[in-house]
Length: 43
Image 1 (tube, one colour):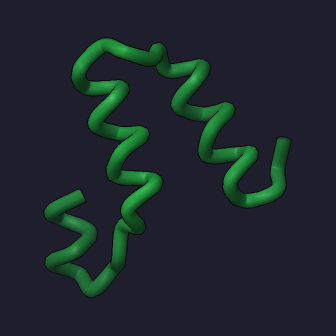
Image 2 (image 1 turned 90 degrees about the vertical axis):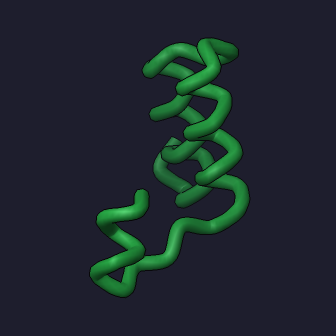
């Protein structure tokens, strides 16, 4: 995320929260992808 932000990209609050859940082990990679797909209407 930091690298992207250095390039001018913005990570929204919901995406950051999902990433935090993944890093903390509260969700797995499948759930992370499912949340992102749902957020952007790709479910």
